[in-house]
Image (cartoon, rainbow, N blue to C red; front, side):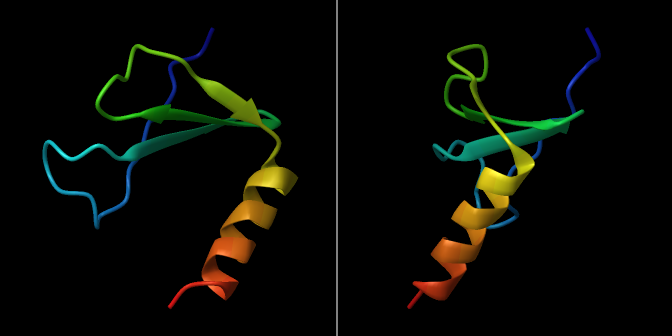
Length: 60
C-alpha cells in the first residue's frame, strides 16, 4: 500500500481541528487532523470536485 501524502489547508492553524486530504489512484481520502489515525472517508475525485465547487459557490 503506497504512503499517502496528507495535506491540509493553509488556513488551518496548528492544533485546530481541520480536514486532511490525500489523493490516490482514483480515490480521494479525508480524515480529521485531530485524529489522523481515526476513520478515513473515501470518495471519488468527481464527487470531491463537486463538493468543492458547491462550497465555493455558496461561500460568503
